Length: 145
Image 1 (tube, one colour):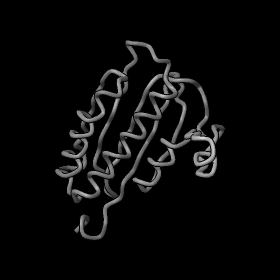
Image 2: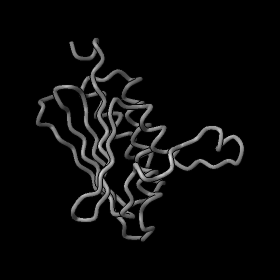
Image 3: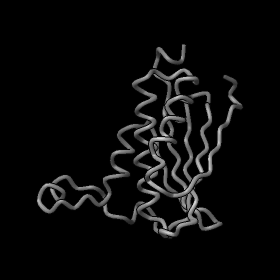
Image 4: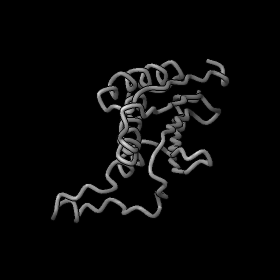
């Protein structure tokens, strides 16, 4: 694969599509040279980022999510863009395992889990009002050879 290989999808903001898009991510990551384990981790990171995007979306029937996958010199980058509430991620409550155990409050769980699957994740608000979640997974020593 060349470094310029970029794959983009636009799809409805419906959680039923997670397995479809996840299969495409796994295949792309495998073709890019990631191990099956890391390809699955990228898929799980997407699932959590997508669920997070949906949770902060407006819930309209015509809401779209855009995904861009690209191979970089360090690994693979996924960018998830969607319309949503103009909330800064840092201002939202972080996941608290004790609060979850005591009250079942899973606030912040999606971003917490996504962070566990990738090497870097950033959340930003774009000038056009869209939310962007950028996830980066680096090659392991075996994959980069």
